[in-house]
Length: 100
Image (spheres, rainbow, N blue to C red):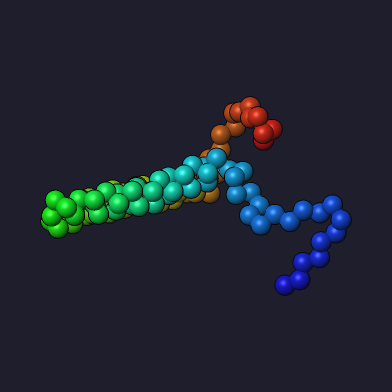
């Protein structure tokens, strides 16, 4: 693929990535699930001095929490897409500082 750039043109790698509030909200929740997994794993490693059983139990709890957050993001995304594809729209104009 060849891309020709003219003077004054701008190339956007991820066009519209932050334009939809729904997508941005779902990305934040997905990031929080990943963050919960990383921070919880560090906490579980710190519990190793209490014993292997405590560390394993803590890690299982962290995995369950991260999976619940991730699944809720998936359910929210599926529900939002289905409603949007069905033609349900919010016609109320909302003022935005970005002018959208």
